Image (cartoon, rainbow, N blue to C red; front, side, top):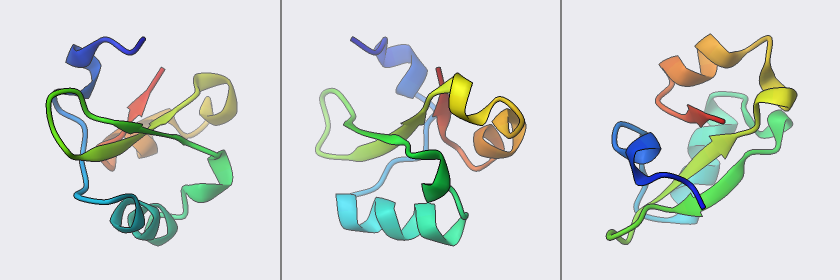
Length: 68
Protein backbone atom coordinates (compact mmCIF):
# COMPACT_ATOMS: atom_id res chain seq x y z
CA UNK A 1 0.00 0.00 0.00
CA UNK A 2 1.27 3.48 -0.89
CA UNK A 3 1.76 5.81 2.06
CA UNK A 4 -0.70 8.68 1.60
CA UNK A 5 2.04 11.19 2.45
CA UNK A 6 3.81 10.28 -0.79
CA UNK A 7 0.76 11.55 -2.69
CA UNK A 8 0.17 14.76 -0.69
CA UNK A 9 2.12 16.90 -3.12
CA UNK A 10 1.62 14.83 -6.25
CA UNK A 11 -0.09 16.30 -9.28
CA UNK A 12 -3.59 14.86 -9.50
CA UNK A 13 -6.22 14.71 -12.21
CA UNK A 14 -10.00 14.46 -12.20
CA UNK A 15 -10.04 11.47 -14.54
CA UNK A 16 -7.82 8.75 -15.93
CA UNK A 17 -8.33 10.24 -19.38
CA UNK A 18 -6.98 13.61 -18.26
CA UNK A 19 -4.01 11.92 -16.58
CA UNK A 20 -3.22 9.93 -19.72
CA UNK A 21 -3.28 13.12 -21.80
CA UNK A 22 -0.84 14.77 -19.38
CA UNK A 23 1.47 11.76 -19.44
CA UNK A 24 1.49 11.94 -23.25
CA UNK A 25 2.15 15.68 -23.14
CA UNK A 26 5.16 15.18 -20.84
CA UNK A 27 6.37 12.12 -22.83
CA UNK A 28 6.15 9.91 -19.75
CA UNK A 29 4.05 7.01 -21.04
CA UNK A 30 7.22 5.20 -22.13
CA UNK A 31 8.03 4.55 -18.46
CA UNK A 32 4.79 2.63 -17.89
CA UNK A 33 3.57 4.45 -14.78
CA UNK A 34 1.13 2.93 -12.34
CA UNK A 35 -2.14 4.85 -12.25
CA UNK A 36 -3.57 5.07 -8.74
CA UNK A 37 -6.52 6.68 -7.03
CA UNK A 38 -5.65 9.27 -4.39
CA UNK A 39 -7.07 8.16 -1.02
CA UNK A 40 -10.03 10.13 0.32
CA UNK A 41 -10.56 11.88 -3.04
CA UNK A 42 -12.00 11.10 -6.46
CA UNK A 43 -8.74 12.03 -8.18
CA UNK A 44 -5.98 9.96 -9.81
CA UNK A 45 -2.23 10.29 -10.26
CA UNK A 46 0.67 8.31 -11.66
CA UNK A 47 3.46 6.69 -9.70
CA UNK A 48 6.69 5.68 -11.37
CA UNK A 49 8.89 2.76 -10.39
CA UNK A 50 12.47 3.80 -9.68
CA UNK A 51 14.04 0.88 -11.55
CA UNK A 52 12.31 2.04 -14.75
CA UNK A 53 13.15 5.74 -14.46
CA UNK A 54 16.39 6.02 -12.49
CA UNK A 55 17.98 8.38 -15.06
CA UNK A 56 14.86 10.59 -15.17
CA UNK A 57 13.81 10.87 -11.52
CA UNK A 58 14.41 14.61 -11.25
CA UNK A 59 12.49 15.39 -14.44
CA UNK A 60 9.55 13.24 -13.38
CA UNK A 61 9.42 14.73 -9.88
CA UNK A 62 9.61 18.23 -11.37
CA UNK A 63 6.44 17.38 -13.33
CA UNK A 64 4.71 16.65 -10.02
CA UNK A 65 4.68 12.85 -10.03
CA UNK A 66 5.98 10.42 -7.41
CA UNK A 67 8.79 7.92 -7.90
CA UNK A 68 8.98 4.94 -5.54
